[in-house]
Length: 229
Length: 259
Image (cartoon, rainbow over all chains, first blue to last red; front, side, top):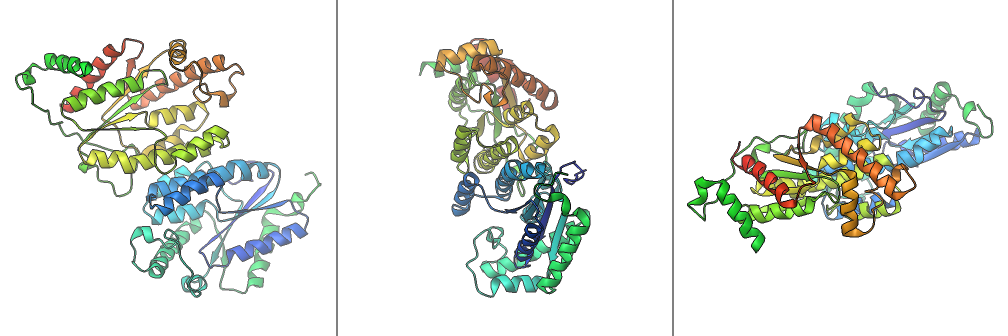
């Protein structure tokens, strides 16, 4: 059974935010970070982006369309492992509150939609402990889609899920792809104890709830600078 | 080439049933293929007509000599071959090389990087060649990757799940050479020990020679442990190359004939 960082005896705590693109989760995690900093917490924000080395392979793979569901999954797992072992674990050992904009659940949802067996993907990521809190920003699918698609962005091949032949139109493909990812998130919600946040609510309401829950569930005084536990 | 004619003569003498026809080419018997675990999404194993033959062993154990002999023999007897090996994928081989140079990746990361390289070759080289009916000769396979990781303390169940994407080979040979013998062979060829083949990242000893012996002994134990699970052939690699290749050919002939 997988365990959280707290259960594993780490002095630090990991808070993950998950949700579709356009759910407003990045805004919320940014506001949470500001608050924690102002409270004097040792806080670190980790984004779902790549180390230089893995980036080189990923962009080559994406450009040349070399990636299959299996290699797509593995190359992102490699990237995650690099960040996990070199950044997240040391910071959590040092007693930081680490905020992750996307964590292993992003990979679970995305890789399973691409056709990888769920138990295989979970097994690959089983080296990673569970977050102490996972906020799932649940917005209506149409709201999330509108936020992304309204200004007609250039969607990257994999971002739009074009590798799955869902539709020849990138925008339609993106809609179908995001819809399936949304279903995966909902299916995982109970299993992994996601804390649901209504992402259709006002930004301030959501942030108020997030701060209250963080205070109640992990406390923040223990993570202050220069005050040994 | 003299090597080829010697091989042909030996093969002929062991298979009198085909000796009457110089041009007879044996069509390999079909064999049921399967993956170790969940496999590759959408891959149908029934369409894999070729055979996957794996040669494992440390550097200096004679892997490449044996593989080139097998290629000569197989092509001489009418079989198309493809050679694959670790760190040869289009996708990540360069990046893996760089990572090894700087020794900058931690163990899970390096392990997954190797798995990515392996998966890329599995999907883009091994499976297409098997579908086309080739004899695929793999210069190392998941066993080396697992043995290395086990020596570095990785979880066996985790590795087993990870390499559930790998196809179960038709034959696997581990060329077994004692570390003391191995070190002599490496020196005869290169005059220098390789950082990774000496397991220097493990801190077993600051002396490279000592580290090499200790690391290769650990790898040998690791392979023996894996052999209990995966039941591959352990071949005495300390004998002359021709004796070793005779043994491999005999066993591969059995595979081709579906025995």
